Length: 497
Ligand code: AHR
Image 1 (cartoon, rainbow, N blue to C red):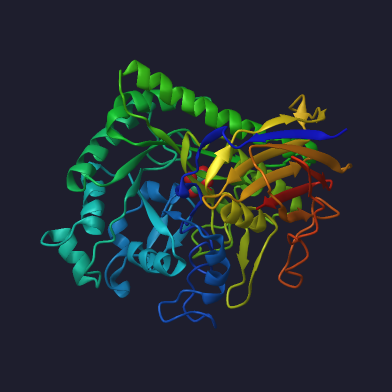
Image 2 (cartoon, protein in one colour):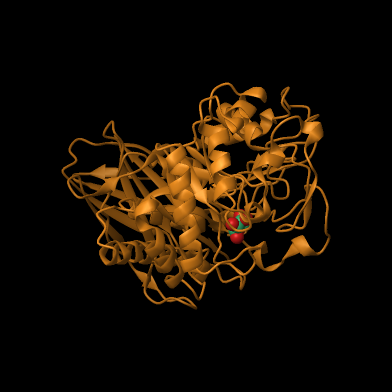
């Protein structure tokens, strides 16, 4: 059976915001220390930034990087990470049960982000700290000069303000694992006041309300609605997070899980609409999907087995080809909801729950989902198109009628058309017929395929190129149709010009 897709040039979902090509850096395990920063490493520059890692992060063209948390932020004092390094306090960091040296703080992240070519989205701690500390951070980062905090920044060698535009109002505060957990109403009130104060200092900033940390939270979407109701006109984005995994080693079921991502984004959008109506607001709050990925070690709680280490390897999942497809499904959900999702951050950038892996003092390499994000970031820009899909289906443990085909399509500003397509089948090639309406004289420029013989295939330091995308697809134009065979278990990027 073949799958069918119809694309019409005039049927757009929306322009895709550049901020959906985001990521996340948390001083967790070896994401920062031994990841992006390792003084003394053979490739480190004078500031300790690993150049070999930059060579892997730069091609991702990450537009916005969230920092520093994450669970990390719930007991974080941002002032610990500024000023002379030798005077910075070491702290017991309770979220990940490690010692935080504070050697790497917000100014180091500013410097690194410039080298990487990405903007910063700062997170302030409203879990265990208050409105004033959040405002102080804005004043330090964004105020020009002539005040205590701005002059302190200048004295630290940063004459120009960092000028950060996007600010997260704490992280996953709905979660019982969070020190400072709050109800939606209590949180909505402090978030509203913090946002108010922060915007009085800098009226150019946009703030992100922390909504649910997972669709499986019993409090979703009530928590989000309650927090929004307290703060709707004062904030700009609702943040939601999601991680999916394959704990039962049931790959067909795992590959269907991005269906829940689409539903989650739509429910979050409905919750926003409900509170917009309820508060009689004319404001359009958007979604910041600022943590998502696949995550397998989530159940292991390995952080508690050995306590108070400095930058130990934590959450270093070995991602495989099946993860590349599962992540792909989540990225397609972002494109399909481009009218509501304006910020999206794949979590995280290096080592922890990440597709870039390093060895302390040694090499750096990438795991298969790295390429899914790379191709999404390279060809997913522009305008997202409505996709009408007809596909053969299957039933899995938790889902019925799962289409073997998952797809999204984008038109770049220069008119290039890209079809992203996943074949979820582990056994069969899926023939795909795409009808193009309103696209004349397009040719197939390239059909890139990421696949491998075994869903568990991956890359290692010794064999770093075992799973890589290749231009081996057979897509071809036939009249107003694009005909292609999608290999079993594959992520496809069909580029037309
Ligand atoms: O990314 C790892 C953790 O996952 C983050 O610290 C937290 O926000 C989420 O639960």
